[in-house]
Length: 228
Image (cartoon, rainbow, N blue to C red; front, side, top):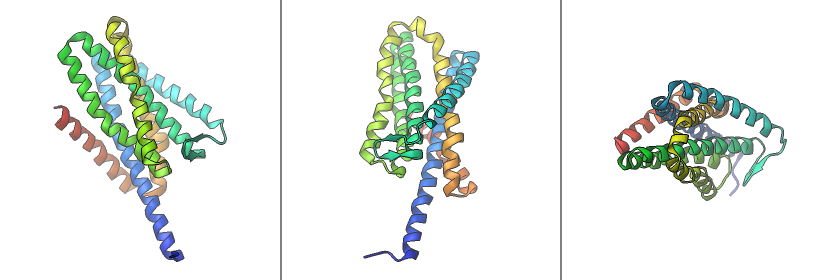
């Protein structure tokens, strides 16, 4: 049965509306994640965390310009502008996993109890972070299973970096706040330069602001309940 123009247009509008809501939801989750990264970085060194934030801003801006040079980027099922956004968010989330992996190794360099607590916290934290990635990829046309694989891929640096950070904790500990700040700064840039503008193309500022705020608060509650 063919949809008449009115029904077809209504279906398209609903789809675009949910794309905007998904973008706003991802933005709130990423802002909450960046808040956690920067707060943790401050525990190790305020100045180095600020340096990391600025460095993250510079690096992601340069990365954006480099990716923009390719007029027809592609990744999996995505092409063009959608592929560029996918590459950006995957790059940001992968980079922040490096910092979290160092955090795990440094924590185990202190005490086993602290290391286990940090590992549990990051493992739980990976759930909403993976959701944020999927909320950007799936509505733009990537299959759910491929988005899930990409979400797993972005977390691989965590175990890879944890071991050398544990073995060489005295060397890695000074750069930890830089890495955490870098990941947080890059994520904040991504939220305001890419994801929120996408949301505002599809939904009202009021709805976008509501979804961002609720998802931000929701992740904080999730962390408090699951981690304590």
